[in-house]
Image (cartoon, rainbow, N blue to C red; front, side):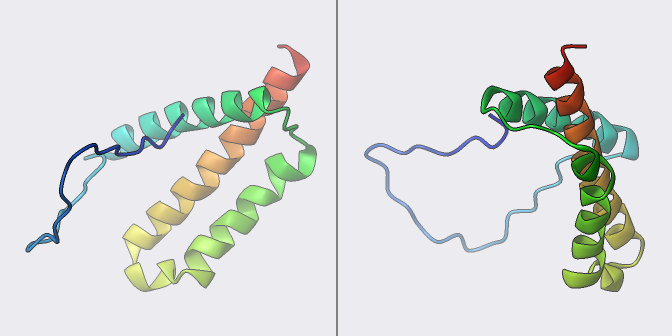
Length: 107
């Protein structure tokens, strides 16, 4: 639902000579608008699959995600960008499970 996939029929695939730069948003406002959309779509997808939320998923898992992005994946080496991306991952996870909790309770 969130990540579309490319489907090619009768097309050739070639190696690119130059990199493709993918800037998915150009501001913090755009980033948090995306967090709102992605967390909503993820929660709806998990709800449709029967996945449940819990206190641990809402409060502990986002902290573990932040740790993974910032410490394990080396976000600390990227300075402010690493902090922003780690917080993005944490906030998306938190909101996803919070929204799922409200879908589970019917509110």
